[in-house]
Length: 338
Image (tube, rainbow, N blue to C red):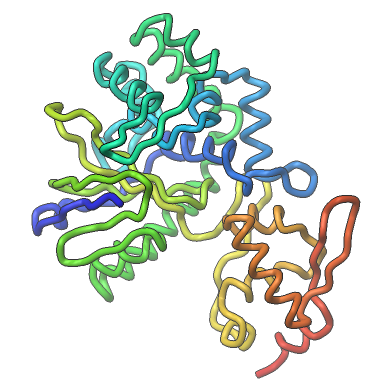
């Protein structure tokens, strides 16, 4: 567990950050995630990113996210200087990272850190070859690959994704105005807890971090929680950053996704998440497709579909090796109640 200690000053300095680059690195987690599998027609977010990585031959970026380690170097997510960062400034920060910082973070990734609860792993050959060029050239290569992934997969969809990020920040700002910042912090993700001592993050790493501020960064690809902290004792301490999944909305490559709607009889009876999944099954869809459309883990969708199927609200058919779900007649009756 990570604990970020927040005093009154740190709370006053807590802010939201809009970052194009953070969303590029967030998309790479789909390489690891089972939820990133291709949806119908191969248009899902995971398929989109894997295709871009393969076609552009982004071997170093792929290496970062295919190892067994549990820590990804924080220099990939440079410290934001303002609320809305530009991709150019962020890529420049990656390309010019201090060599000692880069070297320490790579060592932590590969060797792990037992005291911090970080597991290491064996370095892929492509990563070792790139590291042989030296820290400066390695950093420039990473920045160039990030730019290529932006150009091919994320940048063309950025207006839609940015709209989703803006909507997330606006909703949480309204919540803060009504209920206070504590409710916002506690509502970022199920693995974020807040009390009078600060923020607790239920992650594998173990540490207690004093902070003078906190950056909250909505991301749109992964449904997971990620944290970026300063791993170097004695260095200029960076503000901790919590990268959390934005509220569901438009999905890359698939057009606008389902948005949480107003309360409904179905939602009252079966819960909001199951109600949204059920409403989206007016046509047959697979577990993987629903996971990508609703930005949920495939295991979470599978659990909810099982509940709905046992309740007689879904019919299940097969298309090749895929199980497809669709609303049963009983679901229509449920929607019309009340």
